[in-house]
Amino acid sequence: TEFSYTIEHSKEATLVFDIRVNKAGKVTSCVLNEERSTSTSYPVMMKAKNKIMNSLKFKTGIGYPEFHQGYVQIKTVKAEQKHTPSPFDPPL
Image (cartoon, rainbow, N blue to C red; front, side):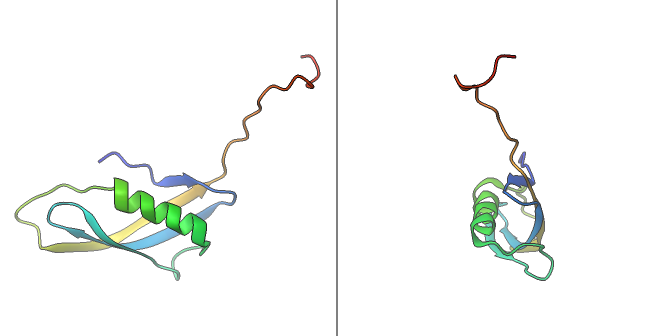
C-alpha cells in the first residue's frame, strides 16, 4: 500500500522496527530495534508503531511462507511552523 516513511516530531531521528508479516500481508509484530534507532522516545515510538501496525500492508500470496520478517525504518521530521495571522501582527 502507499505508505509514508516519515512522521512529524520535535527532533529529527531514525526509528528502526523489526516486523513480522503474515500470509495476508498484515503486520503482526512490530518491535523497536534500539540498537539501530537514534531515538527511544516513547511517544514518537508509539506513534510510529501504530502507523506501521495500522497502515502498512503487503502483497498477499499463496507461495509466501506463513510469516515473513524484516525491518521498517521511519524518519522523523520537524513539523513546519505555520504562521496564523493575528490581529496584532504588523501590516505587510
